Image: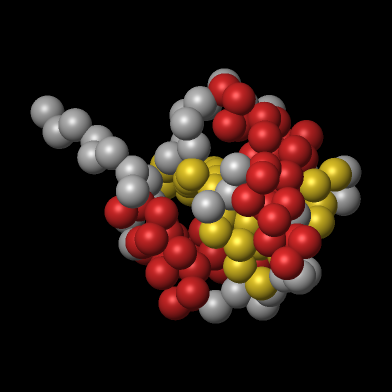
Length: 123
């Protein structure tokens, strides 16, 4: 899958992108809303985004990418009240994971999302 990973914590993006790449995914990293929106013209299968970013919210990113193309999303946040989960869902995220994120939870969320995605045609 082609994944856009957005988080302002450099260690988090370094580790998560390494682990996702080891599983065969292509990962592009952004550390801000503005940085993520710079990739708006590119196609991604999955957005994994922290919600609390220095220049805004991952909710903005999900809304922008959803307007441009069909994309699945996993929200990552230190907050997971019912209200937080509802905001994520309304923005278009299919999953909402609470920090700190562990790899099995992330991989399970990716599996749940990709089961509903159409297969990529093979040549």
